[in-house]
Length: 140
View 1 (cartoon, rainbow, N blue to C red):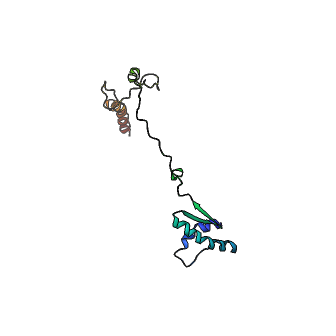
View 2 (cartoon, rainbow, N blue to C red):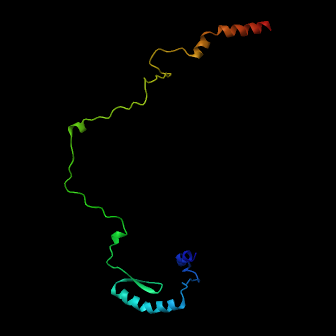
View 3 (tube, rainbow, N blue to C red):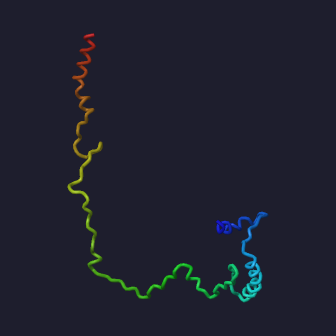
């Protein structure tokens, strides 16, 4: 919990509140003494930090590529390709997902012979239904 509070210490910069690290008295005195040495090391060009009661000098010559992405190697100059006459003429075989022939579907605009629909049947033979209706109306 204490670390989480100190990580968000910058949020309080624009407010009248502040947070100080709570080191013991002897560590605070030691840190004040080390400030002089930190200033001297920074003038030399080294990056320096104070951790608890010790000075930590960061390596100036450290390779930053260790922390970054891996550098890609150069590709070879001579690229050899294998060319076989058999490879060029190969074709991919057709997929065989379905067995049998495809089903022909009929549409209203078919090119084959016209099949009579159910509506044509009722239209051509109205005598059966109309005679029954006429008989019923005559009987009443």
